Image 1 (cartoon, rainbow, N blue to C red):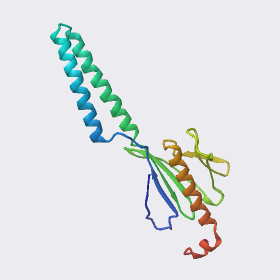
Image 2 (cartoon, helix red, strand yellow; image 1 turned 180 degrees about the vertical axis):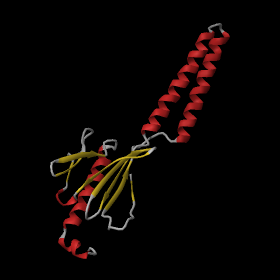
Image 3 (cartoon, helix red, strand yellow; image 1 turned 90 degrees about the horizontal axis):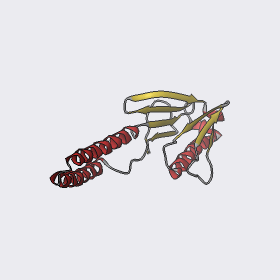
Image 4 (cartoon, helix red, strand yellow; image 1 turned 45 degrees about the vertical axis):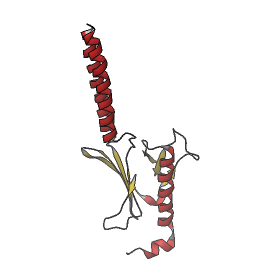
Length: 169
């Protein structure tokens, strides 16, 4: 999760949410190298003992492991961008190909709800005018709580009459 700013209207909250991947690209390369070396060594031992088909199965295991990790990394390239201005809360969802959808909600009556204390199945629910959307489902419970708290703080600032008086017309 990262926060930034920008745009012509004052931005009260700006967050880019994305899934955490515990294994870095370098760690993935090291893991695949070790797995490939172990499988090649064991496969060669079986091959030398006359059980040559086993060698192919070890190669197939390495290929399947590689493909599963690639699919996992691809699914990790999804994101949700939340941006709150005095006029609108926009939620942009996308992946490595670019934005897929954008939802906009009027912030005046917006409610941010999440279980307290957060549990694994807890969700951040954004509700207004009978519409509810879920955000941050790929985050850990503490990260979801952090996002919900920060968004609630930004909404509280927006609803403060003193803050509204300082906004340019």
